[in-house]
Length: 257
Ligand code: ADP
Image (tube, rainbow, N blue to C red; front, side, top):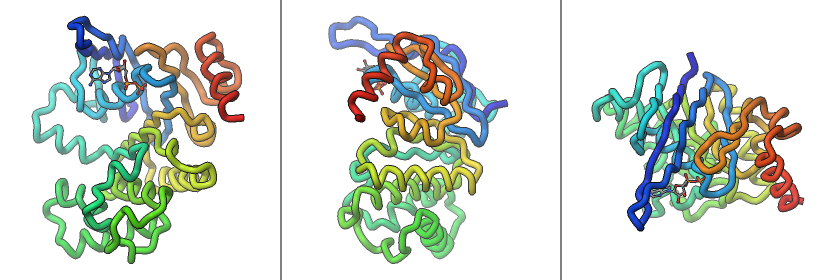
């Protein structure tokens, strides 16, 4: 059984004119434990909506999302909170996702305050210091504010916050897109190392083909709310079968070169 099993899921939004937009249309996918599945596709293809369905933020209009064998639609509020504690999210814009008025230590600690109420303050602080070391940052940074850090350091804080609760699934929402190329590579190396050390399962949404190539086991290509192609990374990126994927990859390559 895969950690995440999505079956025939759809999601509808109302357009301003009252008509319905099928943002996700009959999508099925598996995210196997300990693996990385990447979802690629141009802007507006439905990648973030799909991630939000898996996180239980949006409700499905048909189909099911199972996390560790449990249909998330059957969970009450408390069970849903427990499930959310098992999922970490790393966002594209680290600075926007980090409260500038909170000290870094408090930012990283927050998920523990919410989800692990029995932990003492000292135990939480010790975990934060360990987590900072694990993302290659000096624990002394716990007393500083995020605005004082570089983009790469901020993303390391975002990763530390996502992992502090020891989640099994991490949703990586464009984790490297806002970073400079050299920093991007360092963050990818860190994410790969953490995955190995902690046995994490990654669902990655991205435009950045280099990160897909670097560590995705499988790639799903989305177009207008549907998955139009899927397969092992080397196959999809190396020999795409669908005309849409071929266009997407050649457009990206010409932009990247
Ligand atoms: P991507 O992440 O691939 O850029 P999204 O999942 O954000 O794509 O969007 C897919 C489609 O759904 C787009 O047409 C977008 O405008 C629409 N959409 C996304 N979220 C909402 C929302 N909350 N309300 C209405 N329409 C939405």
